[in-house]
Length: 300
Image (cartoon, rainbow, N blue to C red; front, side, top):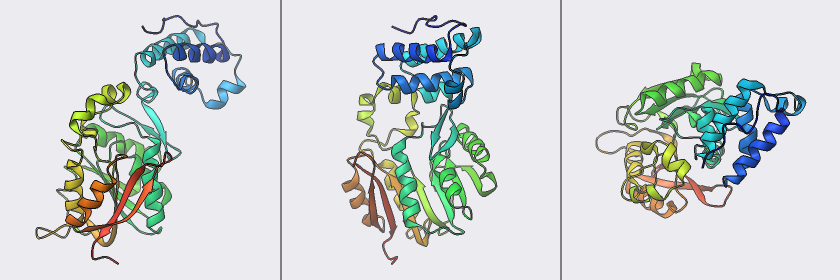
């Protein structure tokens, strides 16, 4: 069942359209119906949040009704609001999305918080492995005005989106982006802060994910291999270095990675094997371990 193409018409006011949209979404079992209705109205009608309040009695017009009906149909079919809008907010900043990027999630803001808590502001050199929309790098550059950063991704579409997001948020002059397989093509020993939100879902568990994630997020950004740890093994080894090179981390640098709720013990085991030590584990708002911060084992 999908939304009827005519839940509203051109004479429907913004307030009425918002209420009807929320009711339609609620009937389809969407738990965030009221929020999603507001976001769809803002997107489909090109409104700001204040417009829904100050102009509540204005009619939405025939084109607005058509666009809202299309948006509702897509949402009722399971497409996330962020995908419909092609944009989302992260760390209070606006980010455009594309099919090759994840939707930035509130849990990932835990990684930004952890980085800010561990590293002092200054002329830091940042590296974001698997940058996607660029949300981590852009958020950190917005907080550290003297820092510069590099975002790496395998997807040309993601890199184009990240560049646009850096420009949109005023940090393009301090951000660079390049194609690569994690940090394989980079010289070592340069980066004060390395961050990554790698794929960490075990391959066999992909089909168990929520429909909104499984059907609309890029699988390359979800699939962490048979045990969900494949990307971590590569990233930790590249960060620490070894006989073949000095590694990506500066001597006093920090590596911070987002993890799944049940992966803390695995990262604690992988770190020393790669020549790193776990410095901190930060929990998300639900109380789950979400970010592991590491340093070189020999660093003080």
